[in-house]
Amino acid sequence: MHTSIATVCLSGTLEEKLQAAASAGFDGVEIFTQDLVVSPTSPDQIRRRAQDAGLSLDLYQPFRNGVELEAHAFQDSLRRLNRTGELMNQLGTDTLLVCSNVASSAVADDALVAEQLHQLGEVAQEHGIRLAYEALAWGTHVNTHDHAHQLVMDADHPAVGTCLDSFHILSRGSDPADIAEMDPQKLFFVQLADAPLMHLDVLSWSRHHRVFPGEGDFDLVNLMSHLVRSGYSGPVSLEIFNDSFRQADVHRTAVDGLRSLRWLEDQTRRTLAGEMHDGAVRDRVELQALPEASAPSDWDFVELRTTSLGHTTRLLHRLGFRLGGHHRSKDVQVWLQGPVRVVVSEAGHSTRREPHVDPRARSEHQAVAEVSGLGFHVEDPAAAFARAVELGSTPVPREQLPGEVTLHGVYAPDGTEIFFGTGCADGLPEWLSEFGVEEDPLGAGDLITGIDHVNVAQKWQHYDEDVLFYTSALGLTSTPAQEVPGPSGLVRSQVMCSPDQTIQLPLNLAPTAAEQGSFVGVAYPEHIALASTDVREVARRAHRRGLKFLGIPENYYQDLITRFDLDAQTVDELRELNLLYDRDDHGDFLHFYTRTLGDVFMEVVERRGYTGFGAEDAPVRLAAQYRLQQSHQG
Image 1 (cartoon, rainbow, N blue to C red):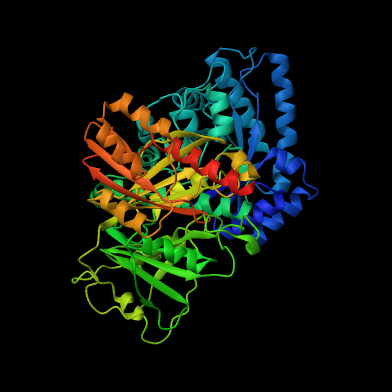
Image 2: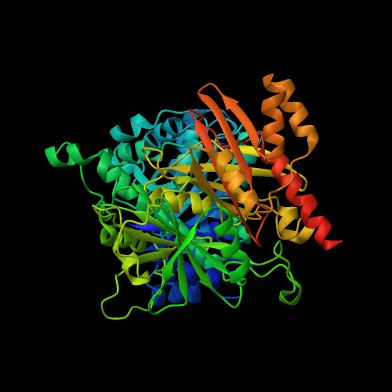
């Protein structure tokens, strides 16, 4: 499949955009008019630069309000097209995007529009270029893909074809099934964009909220399947208007874009596997498959990286963990409880974020610690690693001495190290032997029974990117996003889950103001939620060992009585142990929070059929963390 990306998707200059697209591995680009107009580089030089980078220039766009015009206005359209054709000859691109008219003066006469498209086609043919006519979803009279395609067919000119844009099709709720029956020779170009479902006027929705395939709610696999059935063999290009993308790093956005196309290509191939095998699909687009990889079946480990080893290991000890051992060749420890393995590595500085405070004056609350790595059990680690790398992920460099276990790892877009391993029959992964752990580490006093979930904080620039990464590389699926109020704004939370719900990974987007410093250190700290069947006893043991719980206000407990009609004795016990309580249709939920340790804290949860994540309690936690942070700053 020939992959392309519109320069409007990317930040930076036109020259930087070409370099980023080539570096990411795209086959070609669409040149957006404004990017060329503001560039000091001539069209001929742009052509040579693209050729040197191995990029084809697949489309020049847009040619606006060129049809559906009164006679005098149409003459000017012909003039503009002549000039544009000359420019495209210098640029070395042969396809021009022609948009349907959005002006109130647009003429609603299909016969006239078809005739004007034919006349434009005559001019285009003189310059050796083609016109790809696109129905904008907010077009005055032509705003659906089937209407635009019928006009193209009526124009009956070899230089006039259709451009299909997934956003314009799916934002209007149109059924793309008819694409399968379209003449592929009259389909000149295809543009793809995903988007979250929103109640918003379609123009604003399009201009600000498009995302890459797999990052929104549109069924692009279905649309692509119909496109392949038609026999289309041209470029498949990304056209994304998104405020965040235009401000993010150009290279990582390009990598994310190609990842989305490779994932979509693989998903489409799988959907059409039976039809392709039976020869029912006119397979003119060669759909490449990604390496087969199953979703994670369990947690292998969580890694904490810390600049204060003492504070971090004391927190683990107070929660009931015990030191399993030190790695034989690296400055790393492993702490164990039940089936949970927490790897602790010491670093001189924070690797995923800048330290928030002066290291010379850190209290336990301020000690920098972060969730630096997540290990997952998968059926085939090598295949999972290969799939992630083919999707543009960067491998994690790891020193390995002879005899040590090979750990396959890649970086998630937010910098978290993701490792793929396999479980063993006796429950012990091979790498534990490098810490001197040779037998089942389960202890009689273990009250932690597993990892319930790991909550990972995201910056606004990378939120959609991480959703796509965990979807495409790990095979997780996303739940609908929720918003939680906090002292510095709303926090958006979206949970990524494995098919059996064993892996649950909430991704949380912190408020922009928090990243600017209004909630320094705990804008939305990450946390590891540990599962237990007796959270009360975990809390009592932790209290005896000196754990500092996150303080919960009295008003919260008074509200519990109102919300759930709990008896006084139960509420007194919750208050004494700093426990929080929630209930849903499936059961009860008890949990407590530790204080933050740099950018991370621990939560211990007891589920009694409950399926949520304590969203009602999250604002209480955020406010308590905020007050604690403010007291330390004061």
